[in-house]
Length: 141
Image 1 (cartoon, rainbow, N blue to C red):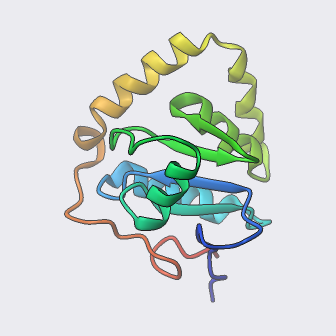
Image 2: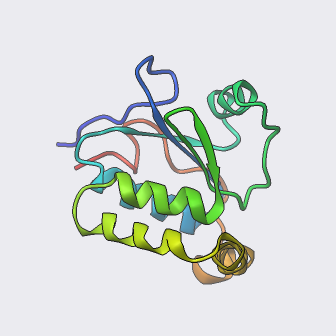
């Protein structure tokens, strides 16, 4: 039996991961995060959701391109590789060690991020629609 996820509407939410809901790789990332966020601190929302748009507007950001991972963390808006590394840092277990890569210059990290993002549909294929919803496929185990 899974534990329900929290969403962007939670008052106490300080960690919110916004992702491309139409991308199989991104959906896999969300399932990965949901299973490893043992303290259930990270909220999960597709970028195109009303809740995500509202949170982005609160932070003065227009809707980013679909290939951009966004992590709202303790009032900071993080994107691309920096977002991914801070998500890893906030997980439990050995995944936190990936944060050491933050010392790599952001321009280099983001170049790799953009390369993967550009070809993400080729790696895992596209999705017709977002398969994530609270209590849906990303349900926590």
